Length: 388
Length: 228
Figure 1 (cartoon, rainbow over the protein chains, first blue to last red):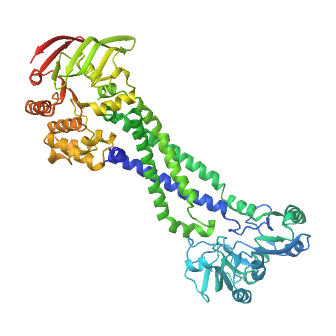
Figure 2 (cartoon, helix red, strand yellow; figure 1 turned 60 degrees about the horizontal axis):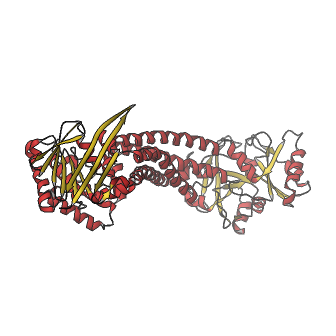
Figure 3 (tube, each protein chain N blue to C red; figure 1 turned 60 degrees about the vertical axis):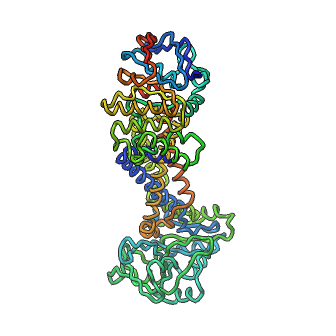
């Protein structure tokens, strides 16, 4: 036996109580990992990770669920400082079932890949994309996830847009895949021809786009050009709001609320409750063990060592709960990743997040163990033995 | 024989609320190495308080307590803890074993403070359990042992670090007559064959019969020495 062994054994003095406390800690740290990972994914998902300093995104002024008319494109191209303009839009729709979630954009093949040079696609497949009316290209990771191969027909059940014949079943032929340039994270995008979309779609959505992406001639002029674009459409039926891609991502995520704030609030409530509950458990455990602590002091354990033992037990309890919570979060990563990944970008636990969880466990352990440790330190042997 | 305990003009006063309660007054006591001393007296006479002072669990209000050549008044709290781990073995009425540890680990407890290797600690704990006749119960937790067996484990824990002095506070107070006799015989054996100095606080005249000398206390004073 070692001092650690003594600490471990003492922790399980009341097995059921300790296991229940551990369970609450595990759930708390599982929540911490999941919510932080989701929050991080929101804060880092650019236009699904396509962040460029020389690009602006032009969205409808009042809500990104509105649309913009296709004729705005030429007007923007006429502005000084605008080098290129392309568009995309939120198609929605489900592949097989709603949980198979990934963004689907109708785009202009050449213009889109020219705009987003971070996306790497072979010329042959890009040509096939441009020349195949119902063609679609997807991120390589997405194709791998659903085991799609070139030539496969991929049915998408529309939930926003229906076709002219009233059908909501859109079918696309997979003609290529693309990857992200090295160093960039790959968003699970599904791209198909805008030309096909606007021809096939029923009245709602025809000749409309979701947002514009504008490449600047000079990135130093971003603020001026953004201002010019918004001014251009200010008094039209479709006023715009122009921002950097980063800002656009944040606006998009904020449609669901301030994830960072929501996460912080939930976790504060969870950990505040945990500190109270676990702290109460530790205090109760200390009261029951006062004669035992007195015995330790009697046989020669110093006041400091006894208080360290008590503090160590609290930290150990929290760290064990934290580690199991982290492991459980990893066990759930695949399921949650495939469910949420398409929507929020990369759902993953960074090293920083894991270290944060462990540090948090240690801090909580110290907070809940501090008072019992101090009480144990101040315990006089004679009084403590008399309390038996 | 050299003296192992020397109490000079010892006084102890407890403050209870606004009242000062004198528990010990003018205690002068010498115990030689190898002695087996019984302290008797009515409840509240100060026996346990005196034992606590000798064992370094408390400080006197006045006077000096020297044990094994150390003036306990001069030791700080941490120095006193270290001193206890080397010089004193404690045996209590209610055994005071840690319920989460088995017998061997309870006995090993004082050795965690030493620099002995794990294997040496286990060996010493096994030897102590063998001396008290409980080798076959080493892996049992206190809840699985009888009162007499628990007290034997407590005695093994008291002797495992090989202290010169054992202080016992009513060691048979929670045991039936036969088991109490076994424990007293064990203490006698430790005194006789292993040279341990023993001071025992007891209400039981039969327990005192095992001691070489008996001191009687009343109202905080040593009032009478009874020849064994």
